[in-house]
Amino acid sequence: MNKILITGAAGFLGSHLCDRFIKEGFYVIGMDNFITGDKKNISHLDNNSSFEFIEHDVTEFVKIDGDLDYVLHFASPASPIDYLKIPIQTLKVGSLGTHNLLGLAKAKKARILIASTSEVYGDPLVHPQTEDYYGNVNTIGPRGVYDEAKRFQESITMAYHRFHGIETRIVRIFNTYGPRMRLNDGRVIPAFMGQALRGEDLTIFGNGSQTRSFCYIDDQVEGIYRLLLSDYALPVNIGNPHEISIKDFAEEIIKLTGTNQKIVFKELPQDDPLQRQPDITLAKKLLNWEPRVDRNEGLKITFNYFKNLTAEELYKSEHKDFKQHIKK
Image (cartoon, rainbow, N blue to C red; front, side, top):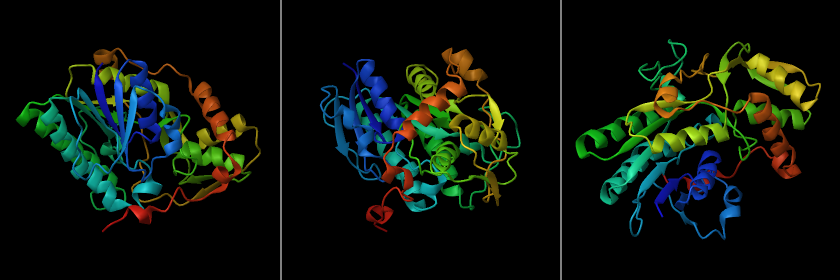
């Protein structure tokens, strides 16, 4: 039985990856410090003999007993509402955390896949974004703590690959959605659906002409799984190339939820990307992968998940007290 360590295991993406690798016959070690993850995302695995959990902050030394075949590094705040509150921790998990896990992979002779992001492209001047585009990123802007953490993560990963010869994989993840997203994580799908469920108007930042491309969680996990088992070390875009403007998307959500909320407009945050669309030519060629789940189908599943949340979850404005995690 192959053994895999998945960091960020209690997060949205990490918990779905735990499920997938257990299904594929792996022994999964989940790791999380719950700074943004949620125990309920992995509670269904409590009695699973193919799963164990370690509560740990990967910015501290990571120790795993015995053999280890694979590492998936998905520990990181991933939404603006998080990394603007905990900027230093965001930088540390992308730098110190990645360094620790690359060292672990080297010691165990394990293959490691790190979760990068479409945010490395910044507010792109090339559209759609291909893997050979270097990006347009403001290093000192408020979003830079996340963007630069991920860009450094890619750099140190390739340094370990080239200098130490370890097997590395890099996935650049575009907007992904589905069950287990936090309703209040600040990203557009849970934001719109939460507002609709609470009877609030839908808030658009900017004029709504900015675009996004949304990939359903099952498709994203399939792409990551195939990339891990491939023999390609350079970054690969995994996302859905079907682009839509935020204004059109808000109208889709109103229609889906059967509400009659208005759309209200607020000022666009600094450095918010105006376009986001992956070029997945490489993923198609290399992995024989492309998204399968239609957006209407995926949104219905996601909305039904949010509808079943408790009233407390629906109305609370904060995920948790971040201060308990901040040491300095």
